[in-house]
Length: 474
Image 1 (cartoon, rainbow, N blue to C red):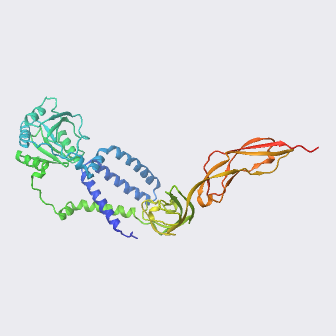
Image 2: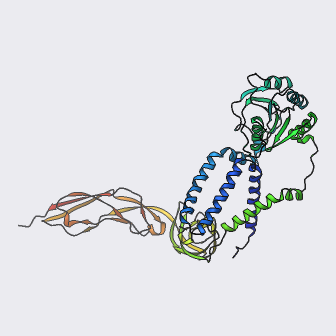
């Protein structure tokens, strides 16, 4: 039977579908997507083998899945960090704004096509919103204004910085001779060399614009979002860079909500279908409502108050598990922890809410009995009581009890005010006179006259017993 659909479930599916499609869009041309497809296949094999009763195979796949999860975090930490950066709503406030001084694109582009005509290989990286620090290796730091003459001198064969990429950040050349991550695409043409694979690889992992000059063919290419396009003229390259680096200068076409929804419709439908299937598996309801007995605890009792009485000590709660990943409610250690911070002296009725139960996600409360706990609160007070020594038995061997002295003579006791007013003394543990043969000093604990009273002393009291020989009359 299908679970009852709530509005929270619809919101759950929409949010996860959006996140899943964004992850697909970011990683569709990276190694992370290939690994994810492999993991999905292994998960499918695991469920099939588990349902068929293939215990060894399902156990091995389960243990392997735990190890793979840790390995993926280690291996793809850069991709995960980049995804978190892209999804962050605050990145525009703290990251690079892609501004800086405006570039002389005409001078740069004419130099790029001049290098292509001379068959001089080059690669230029234009950093935009996303930082590239995690992907740039072995670069030589510079801080200079980009110009055609400087680019020619950098990429000239035989110069120290010609091998690698030039990075332009905030309108200035920040690094030269940088090594870039290679693309993991297997469908790239074989005639594309390391320079092109490096440019495409960086564009797969960031929003950077990479301009590549082919040394073998004298062609100019532009890599963006993992895709490489050939640019035939300088005018076209200027137009593309102008639109990508300074989009506010161009009139942007208005994209309607309908176009946004139905663009790339097939990948969106597939990701949504996968999310719905996962939701159905996770929220597969376990039959029936379970009734469990839950103990009641209290916290935040005011310092000048004392709990005299509470009723009941336990309550019956009806729980329903809405996920097959959650164990039976009878296996959960559920406690009702009630807040007493707002209680007053006398009888208080404390409503018991669902939030007072320490329930895991996926467990719902369908009812509880009773729904209110009654607590009686008294005023806490302190009083000094006189210590009274109690004795049992009698002295032997002609001894008589001469004196009993206790140190200290009084002790401070804390408890309900109305109860403290009923007592003036507090007794010690009984002194067994049968075992006394001479004067001695005993360490005895105090016995509160009521369980609701507390002695404000940790050490036992000292009782000095004095005995003397009884003289017979002549």
